[in-house]
Amino acid sequence: MDGVTATGIRAHARIVARADGRGGTALPVLEGEGPLAPRRTRSSGSEAKVMLVGAMSGPLGGDRFTLGVRVEEGARLHVGSAAATLALPGQAEGEARYDVRLDVADGGELHWMPEQLISAEGSELYVTTRVEAGAGARLVLREEQVLGRVGERPGRLTSRLTVRAGGRTVLDQELACGLGAPGGWDGPAVLAGHRAVGQLVVVRPEFAERPVEARALGACAAVVPLAGPAALVSAVAPDALRLRRLLDEALTGLG
Amino acid sequence: MSRAALLVLADGRFPAGGHAHSGGAEAAVKAGRITDAATLEEFCRGRLHTAGLVAGALAAAAALGADPGELDAAADARTPSPALRTAARRLGRQLLRAARSTWPSSELDALAREFPKGAHQPVVLGLAARAAGLGPEDAAHCAAYESVSGPATATVRLLSLDPFDATGALARLAPELDRVADRAVAAARRVRAEGADALPAASGPLLEVGAEWHAAWPVRLFAS
Image 1: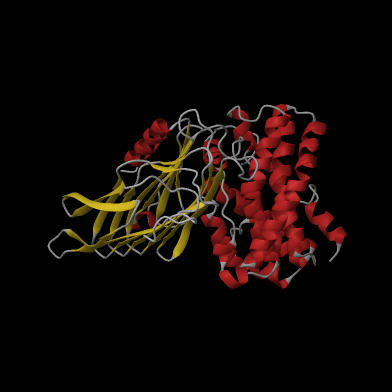
Image 2: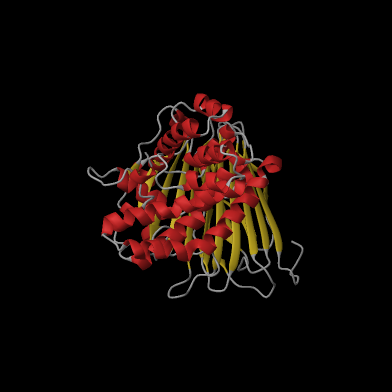
C-alpha cells in the first residue's frame, strides 16, 4: 500500500491457487494490503477456501483497488468475503476504482462469491470484473449491487463485467446507476425503482454441447444461455435479501 | 454523403420488418412499468442510453469498415438474452434483404454469405449506411433513433396512447439522442486500434429479463 494520500489509497491483492499433487489445492500466493486482506479458511475436499476480510472501510473517493486471482490447471478455489463492500464518499477528489481480474486455467475451478457491493449516498465508484476462463475451466461468479443503504439515495456506481470463455467474449455488460448516471437508469428499461441488482455467471464446458434452457423467473429474473459454454442469471429485486434468494434458487436450478 | 439517403434508410416505412417489434415496450406495459407518456419517455431514455448506445456504436463501427464478424460477436456478448439475439438476427436478415435490393454492394453480398441466418441488425444497418454512401454519424443516429422510435410506436398501439404524446416524448429525447450518437461514433473510431472491447457495453437488466419473460407468453402482439 502506498499509504493514505490526497489522491486516495492504492491497494493490491493477489491469490494464486495451484493443484498440490495430492488431490488438494495449495495457495502459493496469498497476499493483500490495507483494505484487501485475503485469509485462508478451512478447505473442504479438494477445494481451497479464501475469505476476503475488509481491514478498512472503502473504497472511498479516489481509492484504487486491484485484485488478481489465478486458478491454475486442476486447482479448485472458493473465494468469499466476510462482509459487504461499502463504497463511500471520500475526502479525495474523483471516483474510486476497483478492478478485479480472474483467470481460470483449463481444468481449474473458481467460485467467486463475494458479498454485496453497496453504493452509499455521495460515493462514486467504477468497478470492473474481467474473467478469462480457459477451455475446460469451470466458474461460478456472483455479483450483487445494492443502491444505497436503507432509506438512503444511491451514489454513482458503474460496473462492467466481461467474461471470456474458451477464447471468445461470452458476456460484456456495463450497468451505470445512481446520481449523475445516464438518464433512465431508474426507469422501466433499466431498474424501475429496484434497489438491488445481480448477476450469476456459470461457465461449464458441458454447456457448449448442452446449453441451459432460457427461462424467465417472473418479470424480474431470468436464466439464459450465453453465446458460448456459459449461462447467466440476471435479476433485479427490491432489496439485497430478496435478490440473494432469487440468485440462490436459480443456481440450485442449474444443478 | 447524401442527406436524402439517410431519410430513406431511417424511414419507418423502409421495408425492414421493424414494425413487428416493440423494443421491450410490450413486456414493460404488461408489467405495469409503462402506463402513460411520461413512463414511456423514461423507458425510451433508459433504452437509448443502454441498448441504443451499443447499437449506435456497432452501426458506426460497421459503417467505418470494421470486421462484421468481430462486431457480430461483440453484439452477442452484449446481448445475454437469447430472445433478443434471435430478434436482432431476424431483423438483421430482413434489413439485409431490403438493403441489398436498395443499395447493391459487394460488402452486403459478403455479409449475406457469412451470416445466412442473419447478423445482428445494427451491424447490418452500419453496412447498409456504408452502401448508401452514408457515414458513421448517420449510422449511429439511425440506430439510436430506432432504439426509441420502435417502443414509442408500439406503445401507441399497446396503450392506445395519443400519438401526439408519443412523438412529443421522442422530440424531447432528441438532444440526448445526438449526444448518444456522438459517444457511439467516438467509441466506434477506437475499434480499429483497440478492437471490439472499445465498444460500449451499457445494459438495462429489465430489458434483458423482460425479453425472456415476453418470449414465453403464448399470445403477444409483438415479436419482441
